[in-house]
Length: 421
Image 1 (cartoon, rainbow, N blue to C red):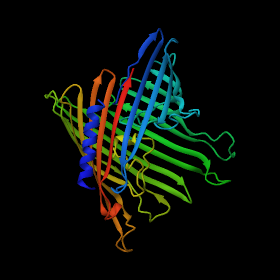
Image 2: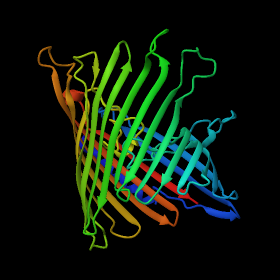
Image 3: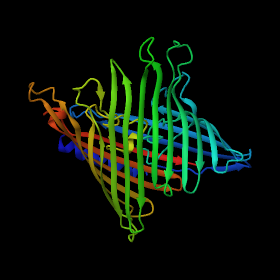
Image 4: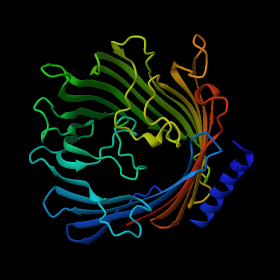
């Protein structure tokens, strides 16, 4: 990438962050007995130069997400929650005369304590699901839409053990579809032990649709067994570890036996005696891949329903796991110089777990695992209570094997303003 273009991107990023002084956890406002409202409006503008070609112009996109939530608690030990959401790309129907169809229900559920079973509860409807640090199942808060599930959860919150048992419907095929086209469900048991430091879970991603007419085999029967452990010490050390193994069967052209794994770990240290709370951390994120040699076995790990933006770099180039798998070695530094400012810097080094074919090289010497490296700079500023600004700048330096010897540095940056009740 031309040096002047990088300098221009950095200058624009710093200028906009200063002029457009987010992650916001709105607590809501009580407006009447048994009624609380919460809300959020968030605007984000992105400048996308991730095509690795400086001869093309950056693509500018702006997103607006508006949410309004109503929580009713007039019924004893019961919560009814409705959350309306409008998600749009700014410039769509701006100044036009057509009807918008962006407004919808993001969440709508009833959750109540089960009589006679202290600590147990039942939730039914449409809701967000977040588990652990969202490496397996998450709500994807960065998204302009966000992820929700339709289904039910039974839970128990105890001192020694707590757990969620759930049935979530991924695809409904019961209306106007062939009789053999069964539904797609996600079944799960998620447990928490040792004062919630240790999580152990099992998932079954099961698509009941027949693999072919007359077959007794489903299209997908993938199980995931995993664990998550996290701990923070008083001295400032913190650790987070995710492990998962996937097995089962996936019927594409033939029936593939699944054998895949994921490992994601991070170790950090916060200087607790400093008012700026500087933190340094390092870790690795590994997902297995497939060599493409054995057609009867699939070794590529499926990331399921994780919050992708939180991992593998903020440019989101590898939200979907490459067929060859991915190895991400990263380091990060953050600091909060005042109670209003926060700065973070991340570095990622990427390779595939299995070699991929280099299409530009002669046959016989055309495989590689090199991908490249990414740096991410993020800044957050709290303008007023419940009004935050955030911005980020990312650069990706691709390998010649992955993008070719004429590829340039990829660039992406954004500005985001969030206000909430």
